[in-house]
Image (cartoon, rainbow, N blue to C red; front, side, top):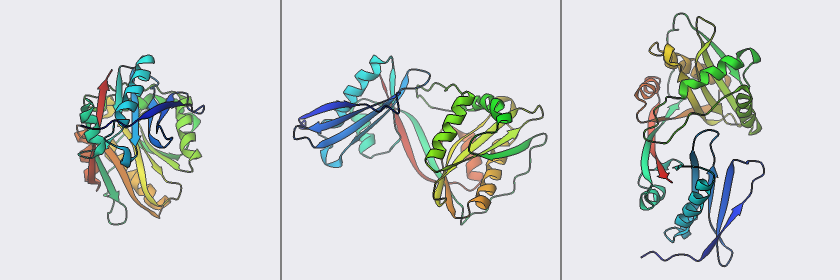
Length: 286
């Protein structure tokens, strides 16, 4: 039987993030044992949860106590579910989720494009569409149509996760771009404009502040009326080519895709992305 560690859990306050709550678990002697973070969504009743316990303190009930505390707080804010951060299969995080009654709701496949050893394939332009590119905040003349295009990701495969699409407006577009800029990173966006002048789809990636190492894809979406034409693959190929030229020291690009998102996984594979590992998302219904 696992021996419980004598501890107390203290709530922490972060005035810069009013939608985030945090707790610190400490032993009776004051030593830190673990932390927990809870992010409330802008829409819906499923909150993101994150628990970290020092390796030397695991399997002593620290994580379970933090989970209990976090679950109570989430219920108090009207949440009906907690969604874990991605955990690798068969590691401590995976075993913790299973042992504490969380259920697996999504499998994420992680891939990497090696920019130094691969060549971006030539992808033909999609007739009737044109591509636009920008870094940082979207231009004013594209902001409103970009807001409308964000709904392209509302129906992305999310397995059994209690996922509710987030509401977007121009202010939120600017907020995301500003947050990336404050970290010293570069947000790169490529979008497809349709025959009617409306944005039909987009793809985003973030280049680290050092402009070396690996960049990270944020999201790719095509509105339902424009799917089946190859827009996602065209946008991503064009973005990869631009990144190669703009950030010559960058070594690779990382992407994560839901296992059930077969179309996007095939598009990435055709562009040279190779699988690296998979992670699991767990959910606790409150």
